Amino acid sequence: MRRFREQVQNTEGGTDLIIRTSVRLMVPFIQLFGLYVIVHGHYSPGGGFQGGVLLGSAFILLALAYGVEYSKKYMSEFANFLTVNIGVFIFVGFGILCALVGGFFLDYGAMANVFPMPLPEWRYWGVFVVEVGVGMGVMGIMVSLYWDLASAGSRKEGL
Amino acid sequence: MIWQLDLIILALVVICALAAINVRDLLGASVIFGVYSFLMCLLWAEMGAVDVAFTEATVGAGVSTILFIAAIFRTTRRSKD
Amino acid sequence: MKVFALLATALTGAILLYGTADFPAWGDPESPASTHVSAYFIETVVRDTHMPNLVAAVLGDYRAYDTMFELVVIYCAGMAVLAVLRGARS
Image (cartoon, rainbow over all chains, first blue to last red; front, side, top):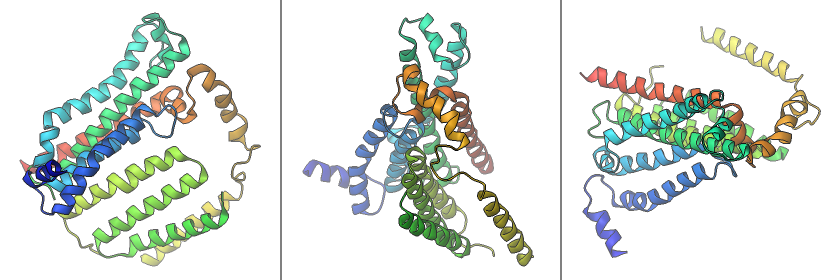
């Protein structure tokens, strides 16, 4: 507990101690819940889009409480750029890969020609891969939108 | 579907929509719009569309309100009309 | 002008309310949507994809085009905001 308090007091940025402390407490749980929503989307409500927005909103919360500069320590602009493009690329690339190995575009069952698994299982895991792509893309885009809107394009200081 | 709950939520949705149009302060309007989104989320969850309710709660009430507030802080808080 | 806008809004709302009179009741098992599409998905989704959540199966597998272009639309929105705000600064 003391280490946590020192960590909060020693980080620069932000103004209010209460907001900084509560954000530091909340962010890991929000990220854990976002990952759970993405991974467990086959069984419960949720999926790539909602989980991606939750993961992005954790970073937005960090940027709100500590400033845009501080949140860039955890996800740099280049990492954000990479996340967005890899996320979209996973979705489209997986669809094209399915077409290349002998099926239709986004026909996950065709992947059984490459790696033998029952057809329903391949459709199950294909949806999982696609949802991870959606989650990565949406997370990066939400953070990038907030950075741009809150700092009027400079990405230096937020609200 | 419980009609009493439905009636309360729908009435609050209409009130929130009218208030969001009529409020002069844009910050207040965006906060009321977040409340409206959350009430729509409750309505959808009550009708059994939990996936749509989840999307509305995260995107409509969460991120879009923050983006509105960020845009308002960088422009102006007062509306023209 | 405001009176005209109010009149147009009220007229559109009245037409829409009149249109809802022909809708099937909420959760009606005899409605067209419940007799063709829903029945097909309920019968085949778990057998064909092993996914208990029908919504995730429809969004990710049967209607994957829709989800893909949803992601592309959001990507374009992010790129447009980046281009406009960065361009306005320089």
